[in-house]
Length: 292
Image (cartoon, rainbow, N blue to C red; front, side, top):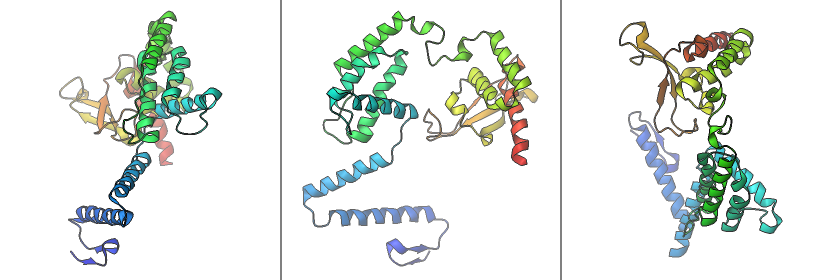
């Protein structure tokens, strides 16, 4: 290995240790920036400068679920429209504002408990990663007013029929409440009359048979298909193979996977509701267009 020039202008001629060298150079560069940032400052000023750097790193390099973004935007818009709250710009997340929002808005929102609880999680994420980073004591969204609002919301939901009535639970879509005859009618219409609805049939069948989230279905690509042995209903022979979907790790899916996961489903006794059939139909229509 030969190194030429300063740490910032190093040219490296090595293949086996390139990744380790790049990391070492990155650490040297960060150390130099840190020294320049704190040169000539007092002890307290140095600590404050590094705290500000950490806050900036957290704010600029963290991402959250899209549902959190939507809830936070709704919250900020509502707060800004309330003249008595006197909040036209950030920080929007304050003890008074949050208590008002839950007491006046969330307590009157229809939805199952887990969905409504995500409102707390969304605002807590934004408090910890955007508006109140590193504060001591840390801002906590939960409060007695919020718990009372959640109990009132639960009571409202039960008086409206709870999650047992059709369509009341957002986690139970059409695939959960439709009878089999209606499901077959929908899928037959798609296969016979609407070739341009291919993604809808794939989304419906995989969600029905493997509980793959709709958001994940819509982000899957052809490269995420995998045909593998060992997952079929038989140990050997044609039925030993199974079609799997690869759910990539990272921020692609709503569920944050730390590793690549795979999910599969066996053939359905009704071909119209079969995930393998719908995927094969869609690929047979899409692949020729891609090749052309």
